[in-house]
Image (cartoon, rainbow, N blue to C red; front, side, top):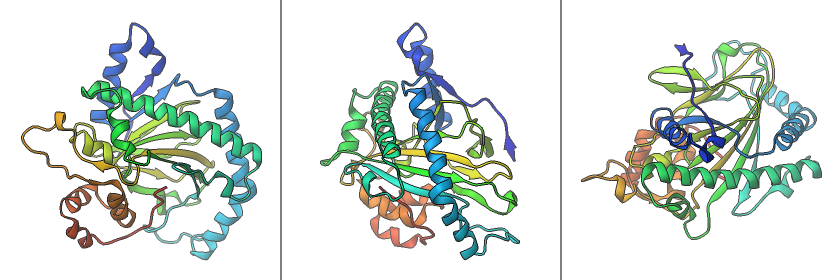
Length: 320
């Protein structure tokens, strides 16, 4: 069942005025009850966002569309006569920003596109760190706590998944992206403001994440659920295909460093925590094979590393 209810939209400019308390409360409620929220007046220049969107769509047409169509033919998806559950209807490439950029290694990107994505990525990195401090404030953690945990000894990991979801002749037969929770920390999504498709699971119903011009969608990954001892939750989400329109999605993942030690914050734990402690890279090695399976067995497996082999791998995933 799909359901339309009021999705949380946060105006970050209100943090600087008389409505700060209400705005912080809205962010906290969204983190506790949605795992998602959408932000406006976030400080990212609209002209930069427009440039990134224009160039991303041009890059798809010039460099990715033919590869996508070739993939459909190679996998027999150009007919779509039966429901497909093990492939996603998406065209994707990945950018790494931290700890080391791969921007210059991506083929077929113009210098102007590289420059725009570098600027956009840096601004999103700063925004992610500001948002983590807002979460710390709401959680009663000292400022910088989450950034420190994410840092490890090498600094955080930060990367961007650039996706296009082309129109699909039979949307009921295949998903743009199958349902999953994100493994990492904080995800910042710049999505198409005209073509919808992103949905999250809330109270057993699939809820549309509304496309808003110049907004950024925020969602929480598994690591924040662990660190907050379940006060905040990562939430299952998916992308449904559409008969009309090509949906752009630029998702940036601000994740812990590979050697970061993840555990519930002591101030958020009562007598005992149900959540495990682990090194982030170990979690990602497990997640890479079971992305489209429920998160709870992953948490259980990390409590007992030997149990990780009991989970049947189903997919590979970019871990930046």
